[in-house]
Length: 420
Image (cartoon, rainbow, N blue to C red; front, top):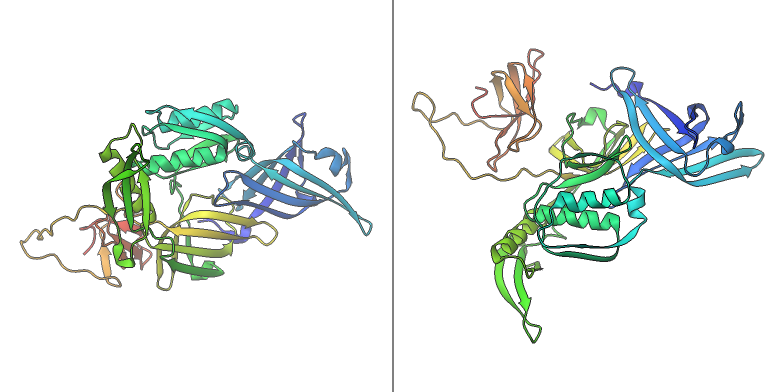
């Protein structure tokens, strides 16, 4: 478990010659953030522009220098939290004091700042389309764990590369691919599934400063109409209509079937639009002591009063001076599965009905980070536990347990039949 009271930071600068300087003692106003609609991580700091044995700090730190931010919890966690290249350099002299203010961006900033014209023929896979951009911009690549579906013809004119990548990945998600995020880690570009982090941090009332939850139907889509190619008069015929939660009224989107796309493929894409945008929006804003290693796209568990569940990090802002952070989150809604018929117990009797709030005896085994099929699982000891949540949508691991004694360490989603 991370000890938030022992979090420390250090800032290291590398100049164009490969020389490294630890400037932690000179730095204040240190922070970094990942915005919802941005690929690149941005960091900033203010430093005393003092004279060192190597000269004034403003002479050591110049545009193009690499800045690394590292964090430690005083124990097993010690490593890079953020990095970026100095893009904005500002030396300020005021009231006899000299300061240096710098803003840095990681390697993905090149894609946010660059426009391009790109054409992909029908049948191009997601992976090759995205990696071609990274290759053309000579960006070191790490893991690609994103989708790889066949796309229809795609043409982009005078578009920012960051927007092209996001649209390609969004189109892949509409075609059934896994939603993903793009980020730089230790200098390498990664394409990773949302919520793929191995360590999931839990935020409760006793370790969090504030929770702010909102529920909205303002952007809800309840119907998607699939239209075909235009005829000679420019009219398009309706080829399919996919209904969602129309009890909230008709809020319609049009999906235009591509010339090389079948009606069934278009209907599947329309259904994916409803899957992604036809849900009631549940957002959360959390302010808490800083956990420097949480990134945009990570999964977090929120537990406060009546609020309980997994959320994806949409954006995050770290403030090292205050040792605090603010996260904007979106609810990680479990994917529905076909309902299974109720099975009797071994003795032929009906299974016992369990309710949220019941105390049960956990048999030991595996607890999972979510109720999703394929969720990551970890070993948990047997002991008494309380049922805190039930996934009624047919999740693979439908019960959420939290241990009530020190014998067990269960804290996650478990299968039917693992407790009594």
